[in-house]
Amino acid sequence: MLRPRNGSGFTAEYSIGQSKLGSPFSVTLDSDLAIIMSSHDSQTLFLSGPVGRLEAILWTPNHPRVPYFAAVICHPHPLFGGTLHNKVVYQAAKSFDALGIPVLRFNFRGAGLSAGVHDKGRGEQGDVQAAIDFLAAEFPRTPLLLAGFSFGSWVGLRMGCADSRVTELIGLGVPVDNSDFTYLSSCAKPKLFVSGSDDEHGAPEKVEELVAMLPGENRFVTVDGTDHFFTGHLALLDRAITDWLVQRHPELVVA
Image (cartoon, rainbow, N blue to C red; front, top):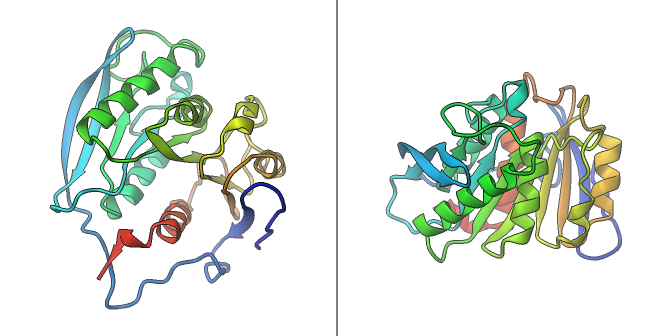
């Protein structure tokens, strides 16, 4: 279901489910087209963070093409088990990798092997900045994309909006029921939001209200029949991310 809205830019909302993959916003690749090679080099490393080292994994495509983007993904709440290995974060990384986009995942302070202790989203903003700075240095003059899941979206999108090197944003399972996202009202960068229809931390109706008030080009996708963690529907999460990126950047699909 597509609902264009009036106002600045273009805002759309539609649902995606097993019976709705033929929506006007779906991309079907012809047999003579292929997504850029998804094989990559994987490097485990430590970033220099505000309070010490931050554990990270960088996937870099093996193909020789200059990447169109480089992406950083922020994980969910560390006090509830969130790390860079979270299944939603990992799926998003695979989606970017399949499009030939280098992708960095990192652990917030106090998570995994990262130094420091949890700071309720305050100090974590500096962790995101450290990840952005690292990625920008690794891929100079390459536009950056920032994605975050749950707590990672609340912290990460704020920093992505403020940094001119980040040109596009993706919020997965944005927890609007208990977090303030009104800072996005001044962010005109293109944004994708994806939530489960039964998300227990971000009611789709509230996400829709948020997206409707935002400037710039925005899209909100609900994945039918799944929860905050997209349980049993990670393939549809992949589809939502891939569709949005390929529609915005057809050059990501090569002959």
